[in-house]
Image 1: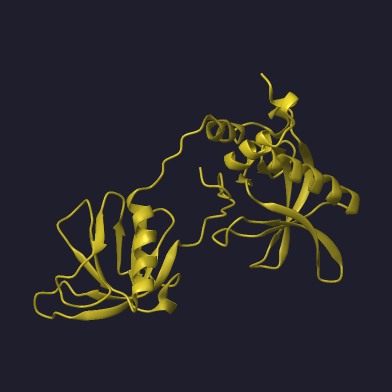
Image 2: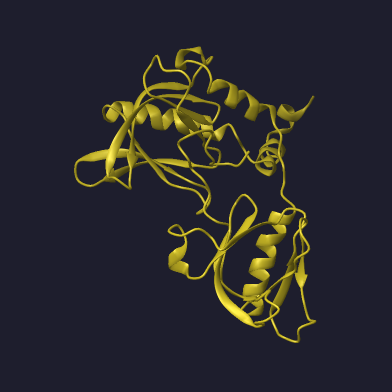
Length: 261
């Protein structure tokens, strides 16, 4: 489970974990050398590249490589500084990359190492939330808040109405009160909730992510009082999920008589 990620069709897909220009050693036996290419390491552990930066999102990548299980590391065999290599688990190819500085090389190696050794988290809570998306809205037990919310689609500058259910740090979206299944949902652990002015006409609920990888969301209820009701509920639901180190610290800071077993 990725904090801030989507459950279904309302994506909050993280931005790429690393992107930038690298020089790639050509594989051709006829034409050897280095070519500058725009590389994008996606959050799903796939490395892809384009001829130019402007091609990302407009053209298909020239190549896509899965990094999980690959061998990566600094390479000195070519006598060139800031060179590192990648040997994917599948196939017999070796990719050689050249960065512009030692710092840039380290940035890529750190990001690629996370893709090579992904952390697969299995938690019963994820199964519960996925199961909840198959239920009608009112079948989700003990919701922390429910009602109509309008979500801002910033690409079209329009507001989309959902019937929403908040439960255990997860916000579920339905088309109507009687719709099944849920259209989607958001895991909101780590998000901060605040009231913001958007333009001169309305006050909105801002959901700000814990990292720039994720999107910021704007919602608006039917009126100011409903906004405040949702803000209070969202904050309480998100705050249930304390980081472990903070939970331990809170426990240690309690008076002695409260910590006795």
